[in-house]
Length: 384
Image (cartoon, rainbow, N blue to C red; front, side, top):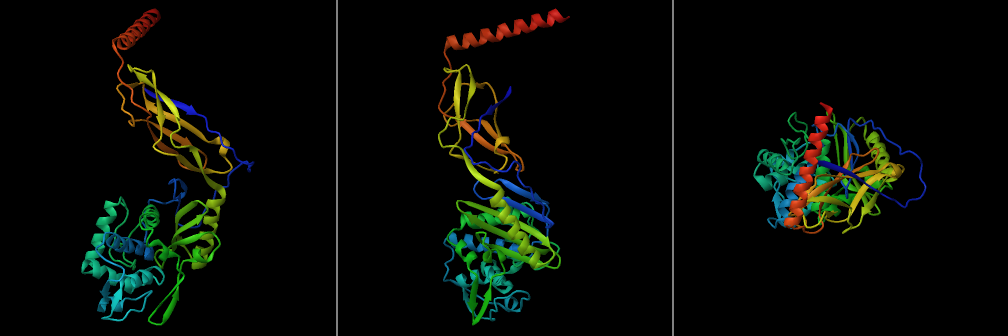
């Protein structure tokens, strides 16, 4: 029998406006996610595969960072610049054909200069050819769960087969922060000089007072102007994507507006501390009638600041749970629901083991079932 019980949530917060402010965006695709909790604060066409433009360079960097993290490569190792890389159009690091370039410089050239030439050098250095590298990118995307991503090149150069969704791009942006902290500081650098040529980053977030520290822009005629952004304020971080803006100015204005909104209108609260018994589940034929339910750590949730009184939490489980029960066994889910965010599901586990009851317990339970059946039969007979 599926059971549900409400759990009381009490928040000691200062008085706030009565209603949270929702937001709309001119972007054709948008997604805003809280880094700590994974809460989706804004979603618009987030699962639609779109031309990612230079934002797909994040996948090229992912492949390079994975090789570095595994020890296969070092930052001082070099790759040679091929004729193909040297001839690449679009944004450039201005590499020279035949020169050997350190990987650390290629990383900066990709992140800060958005260098197409640097991307091709990395692709050829890791896979032998850009075509082979693009296939590896797609295969790795599938392994990571990025089902909407297909790559035909390492640069984001316009191609009908090069596609990524907002969900995949935000996942990739989150991965840059979470999995590669040793390399992430490169994203906050605002300029880089190579061969006497100094170029500044194209990421407008780094020049705003919103805590921006990454990640990558993507302007093309087909895709419009987009940005995968990451910003941190205090203990909170948000990762987001906006795409399809008409101009680079529109992109700058919208990225600042959405970032400010995400930090202003939402906050992350710890609803339950680690080890807190959140609820109890009924036990069937156990040595105890109930078992405590706990999460595997603190339970944080990103919720609207203004709608704290409308937040509801409920426990859902298939019960009563039959003994024996092992400590740490997944028994239930905590569902947290609030306005303007998708429901949050937190697995709950048995606080301790519950052994099967003895003969008396089983006899009592069986007798109780028999009595229930007899009463039900009598009630049915009375209605006939």
